Structure formats: structure tokens, C-alpha cells
Image (cartoon, rainbow, N blue to C red):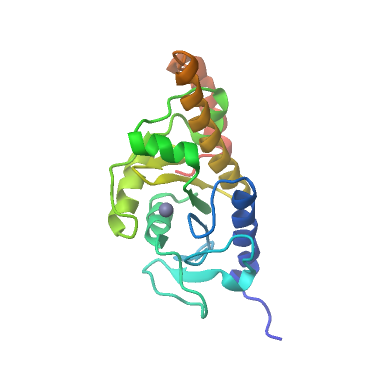
Length: 219
Ligand SMILES: [Zn+2]
């Protein structure tokens, strides 16, 4: 048997992230995608198109160059790969990108309401509130540009009429962020149902930004 390349060794990380977001109910079969950057190279590993999360194996993971060329045989890449590449190119410390169609985040993306800072964990993990990008078709380069623009300095964005996207330094960070975005979207929705949400003011969380910068920022 041939020795495993570095890319092969990282395939398991993509599977781990994919299984986690599936188990947490953030994606269903065929939607969303998980990728990781191959350190030091303009290459990534990404979940395949029409991914069946419950059945996926390391062999299903697709190896791509940043110019879109596929280096692995077998399954084709998710057609949303351009979104991931745009983030890696804009974010030197992003090691993992996760895109979901999680329900509450998608609701807010449809009404195009950003999530303000509702809890301190948003600041520490995400770097602040979650903005909504300009609408762009999912399978174009434009959606990546729009997402990067709306990210600002944060790690999360709502993609207009589509879903959510997060970037983290590691798979563990990014899965936690994807879960946090969905939870905050649900809380924002629920808080509006029972009253007027109290949004945290800038000065009350500014001290947490050093934590974010040290541990979670991808800029
Ligand atoms: Zn999508």
C-alpha cells in the first residue's frame, strides 16, 4: 500500500466536521459543505456534491486546487466550492470553512436581518454580530466575494436567501461557530416573538475582543 499523503491524512478531518454538523441538525442530505485548507498550499479538501452525510467516507472527500482544478479521482466537488476558496484567499488564518442551510439562520437570511450581538459568546467566537451578504447565485465566484465583504473582521455571515457560512482556524472551531450562528438566529427569532431584544452595546463587550483575536480570529 502506498504511504498516505498529507492531503489523505486530512480527509478524516473533513469527514469529522461533516458528521458533526449533520448530527447537530445543521444540514440535511445534499446541502451545505465542509472544507479544510491544506496548510502551505493553494489547495483544499471539500465534501462532494450531493453529499450523503450519514454515509460519507474519507474516499468521498474531494481534493481541489484554488483554481478549481480537481486533483482527486472519484466524486465531484460540491458546486459551492468557490465560496470556500474565496474565504481561504481572503483569510490567511482560516483552516476550515463550513456552509450550512440551518433553518433559523436561513429564515433570517431570507428576511435579510443581521444578528446583532445578543450574547458575549458571539463576540468571543465570531468576533461580533452576523451580517447578511448581498444576494448572489450559489455557484458563482460572486457569492464568495459577497460573503467575504459581509464577513468584515468576523468569522460568520448569513448568505442572502441561502443560509450561513463560518470560517475557523480548525474544524472544531468552525463546527462550534456553525452551531452558535444557528442558536443565535433561533434566539433572535424567539426574542422578537416575546418582546424587544436587548442588544449588547459596544462598550459592554469591547474587552472580549482581545480573546477573540488571540484564539478565534481568522484575519
Ligand atoms: Zn448552499
